Image 1 (cartoon, rainbow over the protein chains, first blue to last red):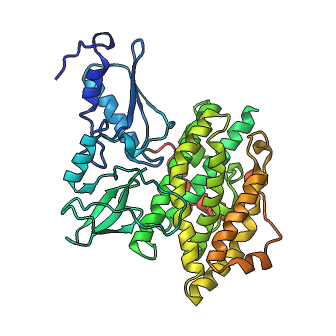
Image 2 (cartoon, chains in turn orange, brown):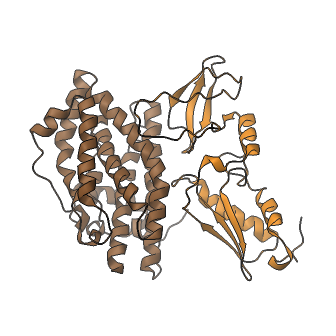
Image 3 (tube, rainbow over the protein chains, first blue to last red):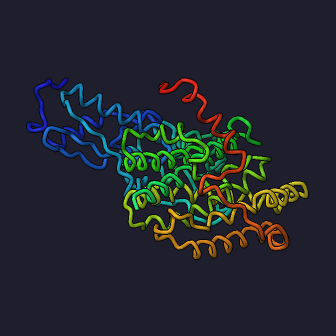
Length: 171
Length: 249
């Protein structure tokens, strides 16, 4: 635990990032908010620390909780004034997810977003992207639904091991 | 000038909130589980958009206004949503068609708005456009599936067109507060009609669209003159805050 005497003046950005690294996404608890790529910047204004985050999806219910957790985490570390600002532009994309984050997702049983971004376009009845099963590594899978258990996921099933799984879709 | 921007922001917010609320009525009642999840996911996106617009409107209005007071404490006449979004869910065909009409409109609108002179409106539009693309693709596919499906599903789509077509014209008729937004409504209308025509022809629905019910357009929602349905929606939506003012959980 860091002592309460630390102030904005005696601390650098990397240290703040390492504190934020400990905060997890409540919906996907294996990912930190740094892995997820939603922390855009940390600014040290006079007496105030500002953390700029960007929502993954507009309706993501986790954002309020993440905001609160950032404030609590930094407050317990002695930062009295913490402001969390939401920036909508540029819009969040799964390209900002770290490689470490993708690895953790797979280990957790969620297929990470494909390396080549395939975002939703207007083409109808498009072939579903080939997504690798996080359990048995087979590419022999099919999409059950484009909309899954949370806004960021689609539902797939593996045709080899038969397990259904979540796919963190490209966005 | 500022009032126009406030009204316009509220109009965008109200559209998303009311359609989000309507779609959420399907929660637990969808025809199959995957589609139940799809329509409620779409609700979530729409309510997320609404929150962004309300938050922005609240900062423009000031005086302690919040996103919650805007959603929960305004009266029917103060809501500026289009009539289309407040129409009842009806059957699955009617819900799908309403979503398709609206998503196609929203897609074209946000495409323009992401370059709007107002930075915050532009940022919300840019952010939301990705999600709207999903809504549009999903609802377009369903219009085709139902229109070109069985005799029964085809019949129901025709009925849905009869119910909803008259509410589509309003989207392209700018209210006073929309006149200075820089949106090209004429262009949007032409593109919307073209897209709808394409999907309808794939869905074997086109002749009826051109044949009947296409002349008269009901308007008023943008100015707060709603169909009777909005009052019922707000009664349910606002109940908690009306019954227990200021309650939080």
